[in-house]
Length: 465
Ligand code: BGP
Image 1: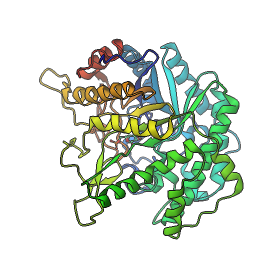
Image 2: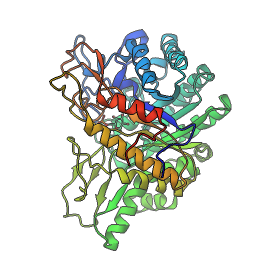
Image 3: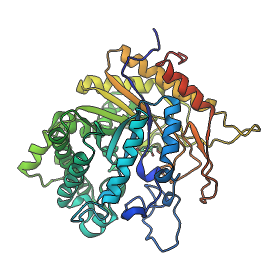
Image 4: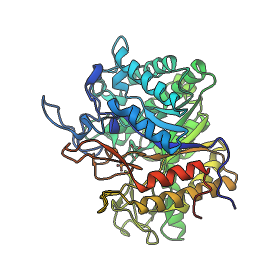
């Protein structure tokens, strides 16, 4: 089988505003939930004080250095770059009467720079941040008013960038809110499961309304959802483990079922009934949910195992999800279990379930890259991780799965989401930055830069099976 990917397959990388832009209060930007969690999405909320420090305040200064970075992406041959718009650059407090023109203007410049390099933007409306003022003044997504605030934000950017952006995503990893409710749905403190699902319901309604608005305002655009592709395997062939795994996979597929099929699945209404969860669902909500996405995007880093035996297997924190380790898989330095074949499996599972085009919008290896004696980063480990995963993407395409593209997570070193770590580097491009904010921010090419350039140039033929 040739490793050549189909013509038109989109190759690139993925970024998130709060993990790269910095300029956290520049040009009228408001404080976001990310600004209030300097230690990452699981960290405590920390009130900001004048002169205090968070590594994300400057991050890698993409806000000022984006032309240089986009030139490097173009040198690798990117045809697509996933970015997110920071809601707080457009509506600093979320409920502002008018949008912030300086914020709108900056993203105009960003998209124009991408167009100069023939790189298609794939834009996430909400990626792990929302206006802090909406948390403080309204209680986050627990408040139904957030639906209207988000719809207005979405319509504003659809109208503004209708001629520049034709690929959109609604909420990043919309299924992660059960694990990080402040980052996902802006809920503070010890919120109940019912409160989290009510907030998720509001967000799903907002996602449906954003899909409707996108179809109205930019008829030739495509808008997708974005799931944390948390594929789980049974720890044993015991029927109880098989069923427990089905239920665990249902817990994240439920989001995709609603966004792709337009209604709550039966296993979810049973889960609510069995757990005493009653949601406030209005008739207009169900109408909004019927606006389904054009494609499904997802992040993939790892798989894990599930067992019905509560005592068995210590919990291993992976990418946000708790999971039982798979004894047959190696782990990254951060304990994320590496499973390239799992990506082929997940692509088939999602294709079988939805028969909608798929887009891998995050995949990569976080590693503590250290310069060698020659001053360069020889990241063979990242090359083999990505090679092996891309080979499986090609296999899935051969299985008949329609895959729109692949944007690696963090094509340039960024600030990690979990713990706001610089040392957890994902990039093909090294950034001279240390955790205390020191460093020149200079960019340099790692070995994987040249490898990925060759993979894109040969449409995948350079991959080693
Ligand atoms: C996903 C997020 C990304 C990114 C990635 C890697 O959950 O969508 O924003 O952060 O995980 O995770 P981390 O940065 O914690 O290594």
